[in-house]
Length: 439
Image (cartoon, rainbow, N blue to C red; front, side, top):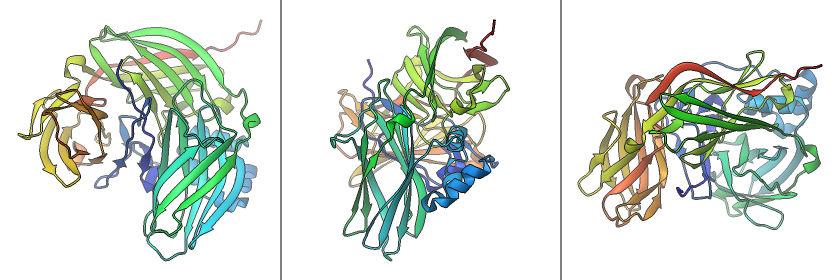
C-alpha cells in the first residue's frame, strides 16, 4: 500500500475568499507548504478563478448578530463562497468566543468557532499597531492533553507584512473516520518579527452543540466509464461538509485523478460543489479516496445525487515522471504537454521549473505532482514548496517545485496526481438519498 501523507500546513493566499479550488490570479503565486502525516490531503486539482460574486443570503437577524461581534464583522466575506458555512451561520451554528491576547502592540482575537465531527473552523482577527513588520509564521493545534491532533489538514491565510488589521479563519479538517474532537483545543500562533512571538489560546468546545449531527447514506453503486470501474460507496453529510467515499477497481488500466465538474445536487437542482477554500479531498491510496463538498445539512433536501460529466484520468504506466538531475532532463513523462524548463541549484534547495499545456478551461490550474518523491534507491523525500503561475493566454502554466539540496541517488521519480487528460464526457448521476415514500 502506498505510503500516504497529510498536508498539515497550507499557507492560503490572502485572496482565499475570492478563489475556487486552487485559485490563482494570472501573474500571482500560490505557495503550498506540505508536511508528512498519515493521510494524503490534497486541494482539488482543478483551479477556477471566480468571475462572479455569490450572494450570502444571511437572514437580517443573523446578520445583525454577526455585526454585533466586532471580530466577526468580516464573517460574511469569509464564508461567502461556501454555501455550507453560509447555512451553518444562518442556523446559529457558531460558538461565539471573543477572546483576545495582546503582546508588543499586536492583538489577536479569536471571535468564534464552527465545529462538527469532521471539521473545526476558527474565526480570528489580527491588529498590528506595533509599527513592526509582522509575519504569521506558523500555527499549531493540540488537544486538552497538549498532544498534537492526528490525521488533520491545517490551513490558514497569511498576514501581509504591510497589513495593519486582518480578519480570517483557520480550517482544521480531519481525515479519519473516527475523529476525536477535543474538549479543549489549544491553539498556538507564532509570529516572526515580535519579541513575544507566540500567542497561545485555550478554546473550550461545546460538543453538545453538534452531537449526533450527521447523516450517513449507503450508496454502493458501481459505474463504468471508458472501461474504468468507479464505486461510490457512501456519503456522510456533516453540518460543515459532505464526505463522499469512492473506490476504484484495482484492475482499472487508468489512475483516476479527479472530477472537474462534480457536485452534489438536490431534487431542486441546487448544486453544492467541492470545498473551494480548504481541503477538498483525502486519498488513502490510488484506489480509495474521499471527496469533500459544501454541506446542505441544514437545507434538509429530500433527494441527493452525485453529478458529473468528465473524469481526469491517466494510464497507470504513464503516471510518473522521472528526472535526471545531473543532466537536467526528463527521462519519462506522460506526454508532450509537460516539459522541463530548468533546474537551478541553490544553497538550501534545488528548484525545478516545468511548463504544462492545458487542453481544458484556460482558468483551470493544475498541481501535477504528489509532494512525496523518491530517488533511484527508493529513498523518499518531500517537496519544500510548490508554486504555480499563469502562462500565455492561460493555455500554459508554469509549475515550480523546490526539493532539498542533498545528494540523491540519481534519478528522482515524481508521481502524477493531477493532469489535463480526460475520459468520459456524458452526464452521470448517482443517487445518494432517495425521497421517502409516505404510505
